[in-house]
Amino acid sequence: MDITAALRRAGRTRWFARLGRAVSRLDRRIQKATAGRWSVLGRPTLPHLILTTTGRRSGEPRDAALLYARDGERWVVIGSNWGQQHHPAWTGNLLAEPRAAVTVGGRRTDVVAHLAEGDERARLLDSLRSIWPGYDDYDARTVRELRVFVLTPVA
Image (cartoon, rainbow, N blue to C red; front, side, top):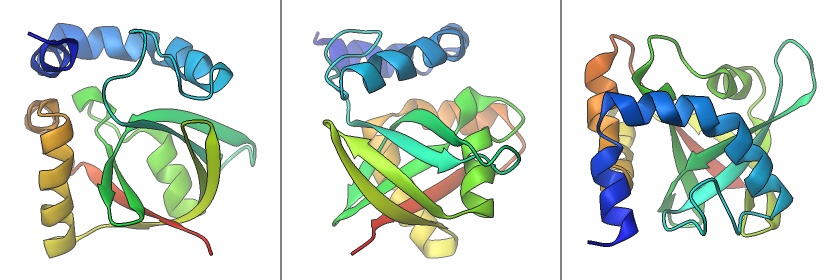
């Protein structure tokens, strides 16, 4: 079995979510320092990006390392927060200020975000689940609706 399949299977468990929360800050630092070429688990095998938002309270740049799916030229991300009961801070930042930046493979792109709803959300959620099946488990653990955002490059 390859590492990606093993990660996808482990990602559905509660212990992996706890571990993920514990190492996410370190992972962001490693990915940022290596322009996305390395993560806590070594060379990334899943599509990942660094999302830079503006803190809604601080006004300071805030980074989040996230898995993503593609929708044409756009990136799609989900605020799963490992199935915790509260939304991750970056989702509130995007709701307050939709202008952000995405860094993939060392290349930074300015984006504008919108919250996907209805049919668009359902379609995009399927593509996110194909990347990381654990999103189903995270969704089952919480009463909140997991926010799905579309990040469109700014021309």
